[in-house]
Length: 408
Image (tube, one colour):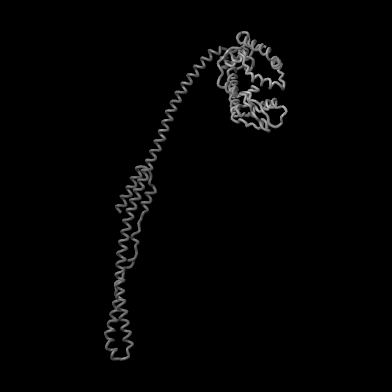
């Protein structure tokens, strides 16, 4: 049957000529192809055809163009079509099926096709064999493993997988696009009716059947196109209003962001100022503390110096009194009366004078060692500091407290 319609007489004539050539020169193959009866001996016949390098005029003509079922000419093959041709097995003429084996001549075959070709050329050999590459006629010598000893071409297999995935994705996208384009809203009450009018009373789109027989038969209707233009204009105006509102909101948002930044900056300055004021207070307190400590230290040194001087004088008198006591004791130990009497009168006088002098020795005043007068009263300052807060009133109160302290 001629697959080309009469609208394309050139291709139809080429088909007829080619068909007659096949019938004349290869009647057995033509009959097998026409009846779809491929025998086990078809592979050797195809091998013989390739050896003769047959090429019909219509083959060369058809290989340079794509033909649709209408018979019309379209653009030259795309890169994807060329890739598909490169990924086709020269034996089965279909895309390679895994596993794909690579021959020593770098051509590829389906392993199943290579096995069929090998078996047809070596029907009675069970260890090794020879067959020719169907593409370049290179003689392939196999060992005892047969075609299973050939290396798999994983690169070609991966390319085939990627190609199939892309083709499936392209087909899915095309089907989805067609379904979206062809999908039209239908009436829910009358499933076979398209929505083609608009009910003004109910403000819903509906179909003509609803107006004639359905729930909108007493309603006012209008063409979809007019309502479409009206509501499209209303929506456009609403969008303009919304855009203007969004612009105002954006301005407010920018103002709020600026205010937030200003608050953060002012807060940072206030914190820095507060820290500086407290550092100043710390410095004043430390300075005053140093002055008061100097006063305490000064009086301490004076009193300690006075006490040490008095103690030194007492020590000197104690030493003299001890020496006098030793002399008097030695005089008592003398056995001669004359010698004792010569020294006793002077010793008695010195001893009495020394005893009287110790009774009238200078003494520190009572409470001389106390330092209670250096006690510092800070209650009023603590009260002011505890009430210290932000504001001019607190600053005035603190200033008044300082003036009262200076007056005291």
